[in-house]
Length: 166
Length: 111
Image (cartoon, rainbow over all chains, first blue to last red; front, side):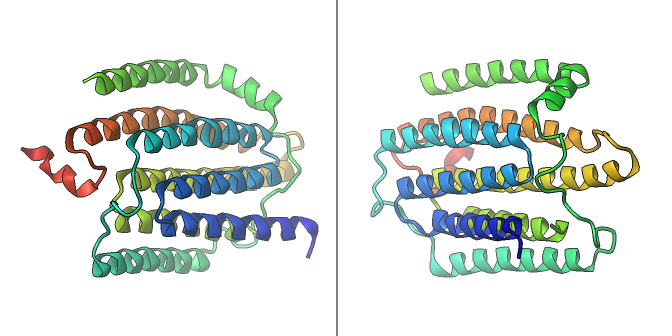
């Protein structure tokens, strides 16, 4: 196995185990911390794919901003782990079975698909993940969606303030 | 690296998020699981973009094929940030009204 494969499998196992721990943890703060680890693992995948811009944005926006917002809200609410009501056991079982059969169905589907057979993902090479080409495309071809997203942010900010003030 | 490995990884992450949405009652955890599903989709988009980039480089040197997917991932992150701010504001409002973040209380919205 090459170094890249070892890194890929290690990061994948790390991401999956952390994602499972998000569900298993009883304390919501532990869930948030495990989710931050998932985001770091996904950022590692982006670095492996040479998508450097997205790796940094993922860490800054998700692990840096969004998860801190979650932590603030949880700490404001003072949610205790023993107070959290649990679903009934059979409802949990049904949820796990539903998710598992969804996974099974799509894995079987992907295994049968012939169009993607033998297609390789380009690791560590390729320039499309770097800031220079991405910025060129973003500010030439996608400048209108970029500006519209600022309006979206403004409306989200106004909405959050109005909902929070009531 | 074959594209199938990335598809299986992202399917695993997505399914874990789905199981979380179905089995937990804490609204914040449910919301976090939705973020997890969004991130799984983002990773899959980047993997496919690099797959198409590899194909594009074979036909034409210096091609930028597949760069649209990375722009798309960037916009998904933008929308996710806006969504989280509004969603958390709604959860805080719900906590102020019913003093709980249990999603079973949300069925009282209809009254």
